[in-house]
Image (cartoon, rainbow, N blue to C red; front, top):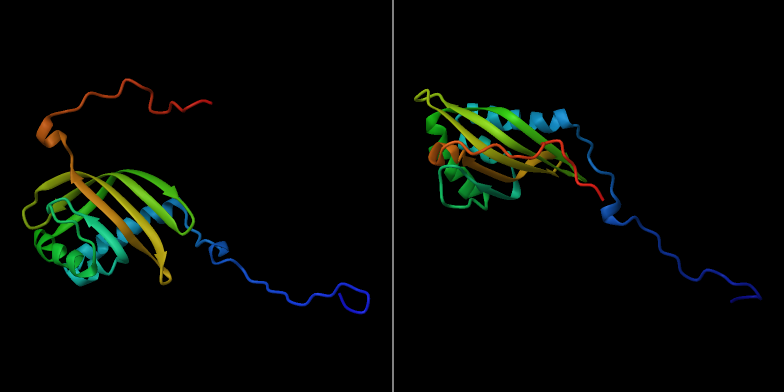
Length: 165
């Protein structure tokens, strides 16, 4: 209070960091992120593939019991896997998009160029926007259980059924 009036003695204004504008991405662009990774596989260079992963990524690979939680472990996995000359194709994709993250989960199939073998698996990729590009933050891949357990019965519910309140 000064000279009979209320005055502002201190004012601070800033934007909250979490209020930043999210990086836009479409469902088709999310699906295209797989192709960037698949193209990296085609180089047969483990370093190129490992660089598709975020700084704090987790890879739970198909043919290793070891969770890969840093660049060196992820690269190490691909040194061996790339010897099979894998190329993937997405058979079923389910995309979710969030604030600077997105997810693609479903079924894919790899053709191993070294042998011609085909391997079908379940996958999930979670991507984050890091250092100006979309990177893989979490990648889980597993062989389809039917290969070991036989065909599973089809669900008795309608796949389009929704929960009502």
